[in-house]
Image (cartoon, rainbow, N blue to C red; front, side, top):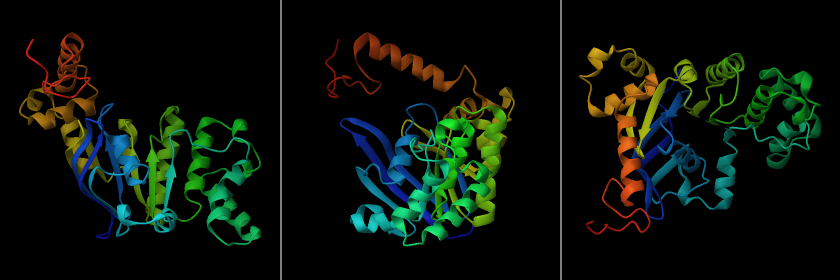
Length: 296
């Protein structure tokens, strides 16, 4: 169960690429032993947020603290030490194709510890057993299925016994049964080892299976943060009651239900047409220069 220990803290986070603001004013605390799902439509900023959390991008402004350390203030040695305490499961699994499954899992231990080869071999077997792949240790990634590659990637992410695990679309491209297996692995790792899990996904079945809390992003801002049960309550509202929701809640409602009609699609259609026709964004700026457009 989640504890009161804050392992990830985000304050007033802003990220810009040129004139484009991708994230604006994000605030978020994530506790030990908690699984939090970050979701939202394409371009909402969830992947950028994940990359900021793992240090691949630097914030334009605001702070990110992992395990009590402000990552922007760390030098390369300090951040390398911090990276040993979190693991990442990439969307594709990101295994090295020329190395066996076992060698992929062993790599973080070989590079970041002074353990004897015999000890590393034992740890690799233990991690692969956790994900049901111990018998496949000597196979190359090309010899196993996509779901098995995801599980092997998870074993590698767990190699250093991290306190935090980041998942980028863990169920993407998987059949329903394999997706359910990955969900169960995430739940078991969180429950059995007290790992903090941060999962970026747009798969609603998976999200409602694994999440303790959910974060909905829209247009670079946090639309809603709450327990899974509150998101589920909104998702199950009949349409007659959904009309009484706030504007932000109606965006959440449409996204959770995957409805074709609602504020997301109406806004997207209006903005796309305006940009295509006039070259002006929703704020009245020229989409090329980012400066206020002349009246036409």
